[in-house]
Image (cartoon, rainbow, N blue to C red; front, top):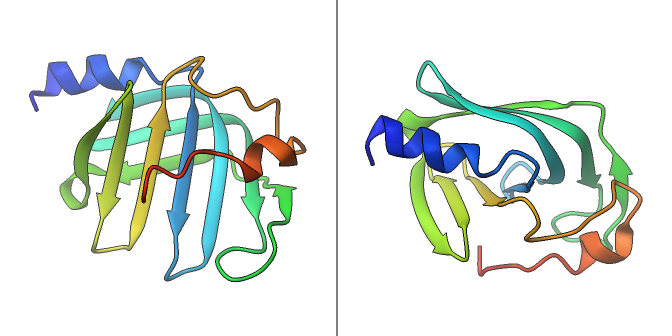
Length: 126
């Protein structure tokens, strides 16, 4: 994908939702994307809120607010896939991380305390 095309696609996720999971390191995060951009070979995002599932991967879901609001993914180690319906998946076998980006309006989660919506977030077989 060309840089300009990727930047245009990335812009569609501002105001959307990001789901970030890593089974090996045991984290599962969901956040509302306040800002997102391509910068120096990375996709960088700032979240307005970020929720962490403390029960992931093997326990009962327990969502808490996470204080980290910045995220970056180095494109040299992530495969980018179009998942349909405006969604994009970033997958890295190197760091064992999966990121699923949903465009604005695709999923409505009010914040880190919206556990009902967080627990029913579509999986998309990631």
